[in-house]
Length: 311
Image (cartoon, one colour):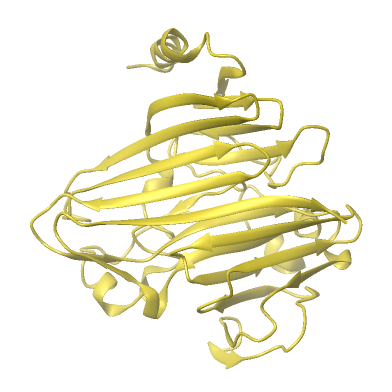
């Protein structure tokens, strides 16, 4: 089905629903949601939530203006889904690496570049809209394990994401994953990440040394840290925007904190040289020792909630 036919089919099914608009962004289809509490944009490619804002407030998610919206290329920003491995495959646990039959594979897995199916749009109430998207993962030489992924996106006074992974095959498999949230900030120099002070972290930029900061995180250089087994809630305090963005998760025990800073920003695709000033990634994840082992017929459900609180 070509792009125009897909849009027509989606309009026929969902176009009459209040607050729902079917959009084309160059080569990609998105579902725009607006209700009395918030607005959001969700792309079918990758089931990627690209935008979320409460009505009358600044965006909570950061989305690069350098994106080219080409099919097969993940968007820089929003909340990409990383699965069935996170980051560079070589840095994943052995039980994940041994399942993948190629040495050169994309970072963060393969589901963020695939088109998901929109299963349902539900208008829960005047302030709450729920979208359900699904991807059937067929066995391939790269990944020989059949599975189905289902993402539920609830747009309301907060943004709630629920990812369900079900093993459809006769063999167990293991995976790492993340909901890779890019957050919009006023300026990196006026923000602090709170809630991780007591957690030892792995500094991937310093030979994967284990460290501990004992204070709120002030980003003043390239940052790429893995915090295992985090508290239930982490927040970024934004003095310029006079708000906190609060992240809470269930069954995603780890967090990756990332900002590319000056030099790396110049090398990144779909990223302006100064974009590092207005974004930070707080990525709820299951990585390293918290890789998920999924038996045949079993499923695993993980959840992330993102909310903005005025200071």
